[in-house]
Length: 434
Image 1 (cartoon, one colour):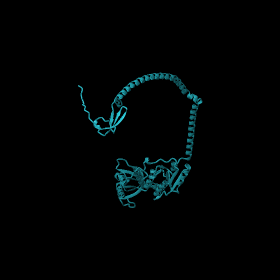
Image 2: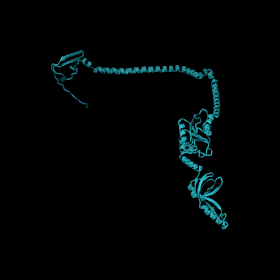
Image 3: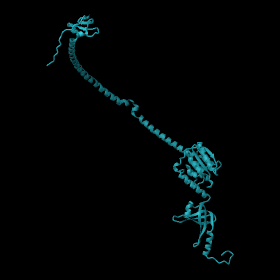
Image 4: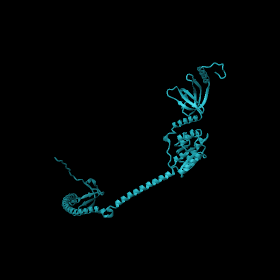
């Protein structure tokens, strides 16, 4: 019954619920709330969740086809914006908010965009652990990119001065908040890298998620991936990882932790060097002791005290060889002398036989040569006739009247002139053996 209207007829519960249902479902609302409960079970036709603020909570449901189309994975603590209407289930007296559309609100929307960018860069391999480089153990030139007025720069410088004071720091002071901060951060990274930094620190103090959005910028992430030297992030926002943290070669939780990650502790380094020096000293002393022992062992050998012992065995062998040689040479000489004498006798005998043989052959040849000599023929009364060309005249046809001839006889030559020629009558007889 309406307030102040006593004449109205009282409504039944069903009528009242129907009236309320009609009023509620006729109104479409858009609201913002924080998710406090989520029930999304396989096989359900709808997703059930609760949104709340500081003063109230509201059960909500969203049909599965609408929820999947929204593309949002609901988690507790997420701030969402809902558009829908109230519904009333009369038999149970329960009220729900039937959600038509669902989007992230405020920081939640930012987180969704960051998550989508992270998936994109991860698919490209910018977050691959195999791409990340090892940090130099003792960097002498360190690049520092941060705000020159924040606490982070002092924390880093103080830590570097304490742990590794010999390092040189190249500071690029840039804004770390605001719409242009990401481009300034990228320029700072490029600047210190080109100036010769062996490692780069990208740091800032803590802040809200919105304050850290420059470190979730895509262009900054690609600049970090392209940095020619290892890059370490130290962003003081422990619960969250920024895109810069994911792409960096090493992620530290705070600026101080980042400075500690890239430098050795001076005291630990000194202790390590002292330990190495001690170990080296022990090793060298041990090596010297072993070498001294080896030298003493060599020095104790008799041969080094009496050098003659070194040559004793070879000298004895030489003496034995000399004795054998002294006995062998005379015997061999006598044997060779006898063999030589025998060979000389054989050679003399062979020589005489050889000489007699060829002497007889020479005598025979000389006798035959004498028989064939023209001088022998001339001595028997014959003569040789030659013309002016010293050609032997054998036939009458070779001379004619007036030719000058030379006649050789046994005791000289006769020069004459042909008066005339005459052929003799002689017969030529031929025969053949039977």
